[in-house]
Figure 1 (cartoon, rainbow, N blue to C red):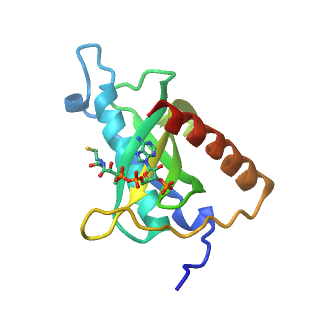
Figure 2: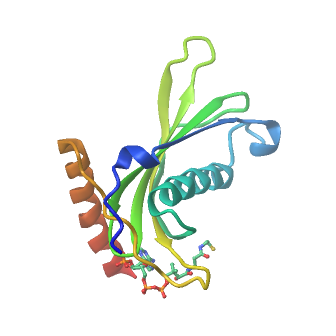
Length: 155
Ligand SMILES: CC(C)(COP(=O)(O)OP(=O)(O)OC[C@H]1O[C@@H](n2cnc3c(N)ncnc32)[C@H](O)[C@@H]1OP(=O)(O)O)[C@@H](O)C(=O)NCCC(=O)NCCS
């Protein structure tokens, strides 16, 4: 039976982390690998909320570390489903640092990730289509399709 389309709002995921000394290098800024692990978890939760099953990371691309994250910073990761294909989905993750006094959030990292939904045997399985409800949803889905074509061409 075909699965009904799901809105990207169903799978939006937000995670908050506090940067501790064990997450940082000698300069007191967060290791890129630690931030990538947080990105992977936020992205996987978002993908699984959409697909309704285990979804494995197939690719992480366009990760841009645009500003340092320091020990003591509160980090907010936001993941959103950009597009659903046959068995894969693209999730966009942004990482922001929240000022502890003003609560102002500044962008620090963004990334695009591909997750593939798999069955109990680890074989790819079909995902629900994405229900685009706004012009922004449609733009994100269109841009994700263009990125997917470039990504698969590089494989
Ligand atoms: C991802 C994985 C399930 C794909 O399996 P596969 O046998 O190559 O499957 P297919 O060739 O049928 O591709 C399945 C989907 O994955 C997508 N895909 C596979 N490799 C990809 C890549 N490098 N980048 C983007 N998408 C990819 C395909 O485009 C396809 O998507 P679609 O059905 O929406 O068109 C498999 O490669 C795997 O298990 N990889 C390890 C995943 C993992 O363990 N990740 C954790 C980090 S170690």
